[in-house]
Image (cartoon, rainbow, N blue to C red; front, side, top):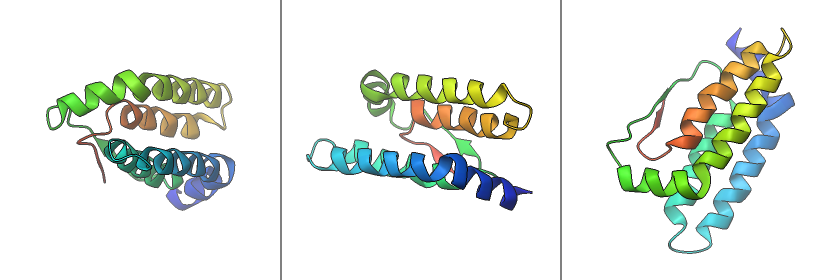
Length: 118
């Protein structure tokens, strides 16, 4: 079931989202200051491709300052956008599993520093 979910996710959402996160990561890595932000974008892009069967453990205490800066600059906007996407997916019965994956992604978009995808 995870395999089928991942294939459908990849076709409907994952490929485009991974491309967007990859481009954001490249843009952030252009400057030396933005490299840590770009690396987090690449972490999110890796999760977005195949989210079914994977979990996210966030640890805010590991990098609190970096997470606060991320939340102020990028996190709340990205999390809000993914949350709306998850709600839209959940409107239909068939889209509920995809909405759940979006809700997992909200946590990673909000606190990416110190987060572990397993």
